[in-house]
Image (cartoon, helix red, strand yellow):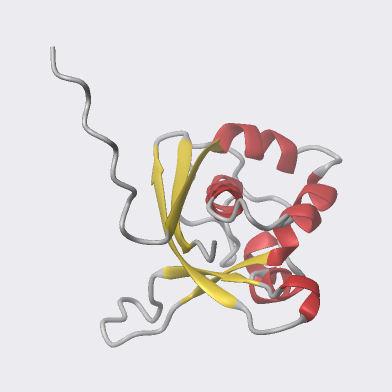
Length: 163
């Protein structure tokens, strides 16, 4: 038997992070007294501001998982809010895992829409803005993909590894 060949290092300085989040688990948190604390822990202040209407607990909204579309008076149905937050949670966890050289918190990662030529429905694909360490230097971006299927949201992040 031949000895194994030496392993050649991956030629690009990239890190990959991934995460999965159960939407029904987030939904239970949103239906509990921990709602506000959870949302404030996950989303950075600018995310809270830009998604305020989506996060507003709308009284009288249909609470069933089956009510994914609609709602009353333009309100966001609770399942849709839970799916959104589960996706953001997974995306931020994936970004944190893709940056092992940093000690990132949820507020150090801001998920934004990247504007581009091929915008669909007025928004581009998501991108993670990674805040500069200690407020010094420039923020950096990382590629994010968020997907939802059934009761799960998943995300993958590809980031530059400076080491």
